[in-house]
Length: 346
Image (tube, rainbow, N blue to C red; front, side, top):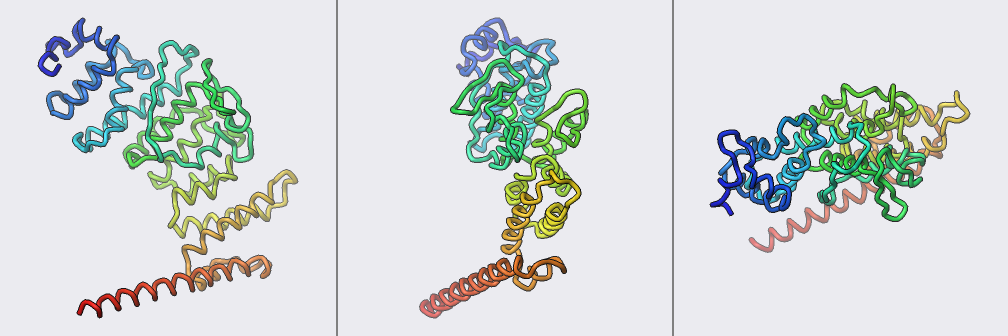
């Protein structure tokens, strides 16, 4: 088919010929496979292939189904033949297209085709506890089985979600993958900026953009806004904060020390009878358990608040000492084995 590609193109205008349009309509997958092959063989540029796939005079990225499938193929490609620059371009276009689909006011599904997008093992678990899939305290579509804003709903067990949630799942998956860079995060923030701000109750002015919170939590850490992202999680989805910080900042001791202060303050707050003190106490204990893994017993003790119940902190100090002793013993055994092997080979 490579030899016949000229019959599919109108070279002077860089558009698909009538035959090419027919192939795209009837055999889209075959044509996209061909275009991917041409890209890998450097027969055509990425920009030219995107131009061919874009609908003439269309300014609505949400409607560009063939282009979306093509950039998905590039993002998922593992051949390492496609340049990193081209892959990054594809990622940025895919992100923009998914934002366009999430933001559209369209209420019909006829032109919003769905295709499988499989990037296994990348979407973070904590996202299931963040709106709209969960609220940290229940009420998300995963728990309630509520339908979203669309009209076509797929059902898998108790999980009911519409086409917008499918797009959000895909966008979250991309932002959880190795393709997430400062460049991508910056673009996500640019796309989020014009949207209505999220209020304290999680609703946006003039209509909620319920997808905004998780996207900010994914992108802000990459642009130097770690604490703001954690504050957002604490404000809207406190139950997810430990999973969130363990995934996003597992070894950032300064961030965890700051988080301990925030959780302790919330655990001790008594100004509102509806304030979930017990939840914050539980989260504080979980955070202490993680900080133990990042410090020596001496360092850990110095991080504890000057006031507090010795009985509360003593079990954590004991765990810290046991962990430190276990690591020291393991290191000693490892060094002894290496020394023994060296003596044997001499």
